[in-house]
Image (cartoon, rainbow, N blue to C red; front, side):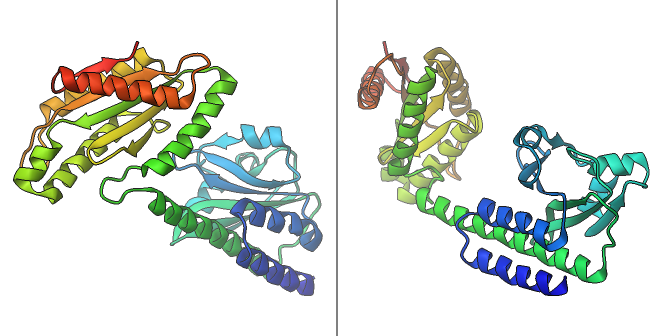
Length: 328
């Protein structure tokens, strides 16, 4: 068995080096545990940073339905120990019920081994492997499973770094908003989804009324800081699924999936109230925004929606400063 474990570790490292995605890499590793150790099932469980719940991200011999329905708090028994105190834990069906059930997934088991996953010394989840029969977890097997967990951790870390690098290429570092090219590509995807699902889609275009004056009086660095702080304020006012982009020198574009123009208007008005009551940058500047809002009509092309939103923004600008207008 030690020879099989060594060969599998080499194969797992090779899989990591050639990684296309962490999902594929971890799946290959979990699936190989069947042949190497004779496990009956296995799962990689990670903490969702948004919800805080533990979720199954990869699995072997667990149904898709169970995987999608598995959402648990950290727990106080075995799961809590593996995330907070122990890096390796063995659980048997003879252990107390609360410990046994805390590890149990879709079916009963005889022996389970839990191995913590870490990145930068921070726990992010665990791997659980299950055996139908009594199995001795030897020192060699423990070392092998820890090594496998480390490879999985590195696979996830590698993908997160690549994702972060790609995000940096998409985001304007001056303001933290998507460059328009990347914003537009995401908008196309959302438009196509909206066409299939027949849901609402609203777009807002915003123009900072005093950006040029701020540039002229205080310099481009202060004007850029003003733009960034306004973008931060807007980001804090909308949902995580609402996408922001930089549109021109002093404009911001926003699309809001599943949102009617009336609901978009309500959100934007709350944002405008914040803008009007606050001061920005170390110069304590005040600013206003001209804003145009439009909702996608039935059978409307995306370019027509964008043109209509832009025309609504222009109408707001010529009306006066700080005006919010809704397209017909």
